[in-house]
Every structure is written in structure tokens, then in C-alpha cells.
Image 1 (spheres, each protein chain N blue to C red):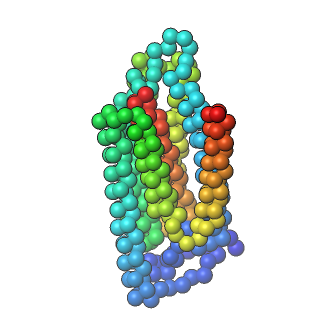
Image 2 (image 1 turned 180 degrees about the vertical axis):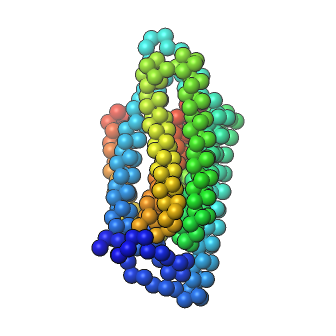
Image 3 (image 1 turned 135 degrees about the horizontal axis):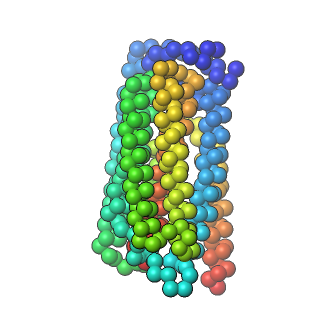
Length: 208
Length: 110
């Protein structure tokens, strides 16, 4: 079969992401990856909870004294909204509307970049306060957990951008529809992890 | 081949029906998004208002769990057909994790 075969909105399958064997395999493999990612983040969360507010004798940094809610609130809203915009992108993918899908993915990428910028600002602010990666057990655990999430955001953004550029002239076909679908799934997973980070790290950190 | 699929051209009526169905699905997605924003607002407001820690912690953890279920079932399409295996493994994993945490907490507590 020709991979670049053209489809119309009327011949486009109802579930293009799993219409081919390749798509089905990608789908199963991707959920397995997400399971492994869940275990990774679970161990980082456990490490953080065990080391929260701990450090060398006399270390003055605690979660309650360090974290500020307004910035975290803005980051949460931005990431949550970007999750919705990628849902819009997949809605248009299923309707075989390539341009609209690209546009919504573009908005998702912009929101993701804003989130990443705020996170870099936050980390930079902490380092200037003297709270660096090697300052205490608490700081190492915090930067590892939240930093790993930030690295996932960066990876997800690169994934979206690569897909958008590589397929910009191809349009939607059976070959790239599963790719777009999985990138969106990955983006939702990043948001799921953030829900736990803002609850367990920031909200539970501020109340001590 | 791995990329093969049977091509089926929908009739006009079928196509219109599917489009309507998708729009309805998108409205449901918007509803769950509104609920997620609302849950987040509650969580942040409770902390900002300074209620008792013993009240806040269980409630915000519960709100996070509800929000994740919404993400999984709506945004990640877990409620769609063909996700049975995924759901089975996910719930088995949650069950094992729950038993492990329960056992460890029990050992440490008593």
C-alpha cells in the first residue's frame, strides 16, 4: 500500500490511530511505555516524600518557606489548558482537517513553551536564593522530581514540533495519524503527572 | 502489510452523523475540562484559605485522583472501545500498588 495515499473526510476511518496493524502495535507499545513512566515517577515521588525538608544540620530551606502558590497556579492553568488544546487537535485529526490540527498543535506548543519558561524562571529563582541541586537532600529530591517532569515537557514539545514540520507538506494519512495521536497521549500523561506534582509537592509543601 | 487498511467510503448521511457525534464528544471534553479547572481552583483555594492540614491533605489528594480519572477517561480516551486490555493492566497495577502501600504502612504503623 502507498503510505502517502490521500484520504478525504468521507473515506477517513473512524479511528485512524488504530485502523492499521502498525497503529495498533504503536498503541499497545505506547501504553506499556506510559506504565514504565508511571513507575519512574512513582519512585521519584516516594524519594521526594522521604527526603522532604531534610538536609544537613542547619539547612534553613523548607517547602513551606520556599514555594509560592501564584506561580504554581499559573503553571497549572497553562498546562491544563494545553491539554485541552491538544484534545482539540485530535478532534480535528479525526475529522481529517489537517490545517486545524496543525493550528491547535501550534497553540499547544506555545502553551508548553510558556510553562517551560516559567519553570526555568522558578528554578533560577531558587538557585539565586542559595537553594541549588546539591544544597540538601530536600533540594536534590525536589529538582530531580520536578526537573524530570520538565524534561518530559521539553521532550513532548520537541516531539510535537518535529511531527508538525516533518508532516507539514504530507497532510494527514494512515502513516502519520497514529504518530500524532500518540504524541497527544504523551502530552496528557505529562499533565497527569503535573496534577500530582502541584498537589503533593507544592500544595502539601506550602501547608507544611 | 502493517500499514494496510480496508478503505470504506461513508455515505453522506453516515458522514454527517459521525461529524455530529464528534462534536458532541468535543462538548463532553469541554465539560470535563471545566470540571478539572474547578477541582484545581478548589484545591488552591483551600490551601490559600489556610484550613487545617488534616482536612486539606485528604481532600486535595482526592481531588487530584478525580482529576486524573477525568484525564484518563476523557482526554486519553480510556472510555473508548478497544481499551479493555489497557484498563485491565492499569487496574491490576493500581491494585498491587495499593496492597504494597497498605502492607508497608501497616508494618511501619504497628
